Image (cartoon, rainbow, N blue to C red; front, side, top):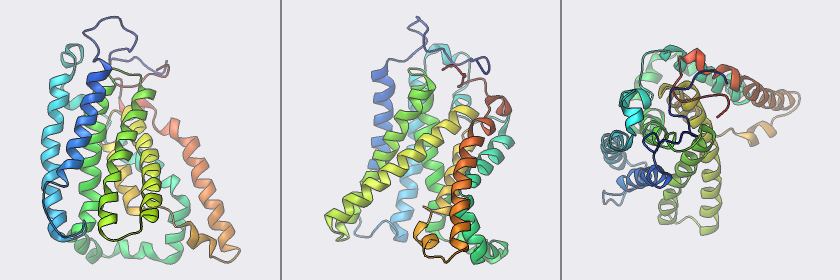
Length: 298
């Protein structure tokens, strides 16, 4: 065992310690439905990138962020509620906060070693030193959605509110597989928008399946960060960084000429291998003063 676990151990016989699976999973499913439904309560002829649509959806997800914690407050077992505050089990605490911001960011940047090297060679990094870039960015609704509101609301809803419920029913490894599935399914609502825009059904299904796949994979990583660190900040910064980077542009690398192509591909592989090797170490619960969610034998 890596450390003592203060969250209720899954094999306890006391019914007061745990939530029945039907309640925890049902609550998480309900939260996911509320989140997606909130995006469509507004009747509009505009697409998702129109300023009016973005503003309305900002309002919607912030309302959901007020509703979702009610499930945590109402459904947490007495065993948990008497030992921790609601905010603690949702990952909002000061202990280990700086570490929870910095190390997951370093870890995620390692995974993107290849794409980062491409942007460095393209000179894209130079714009980040321009103050006007950031001034214009924070005034851009799409930038705010992708880098702030979406990571904030999604991690709050799908990690901070769902995982504390699931962890009162399942072992950590199981819990971190359930929320990603809900997270991936929640992104399938884009099918409606793509069909409305006239995109052929075959392309819509292909794109949507791919999106479901990579959002589910990211969801597993994000849930892992939350459980291992016990901090909301960890998956939030990783999510924001991934949204900024976007999906790696592999065709751009393949279109390069040697030796640049070989170097970039090597860095892609090096980043993935480095991320895999560093993942368990840089998420060591003790580094984040996390004795709530994780045990090495669970």
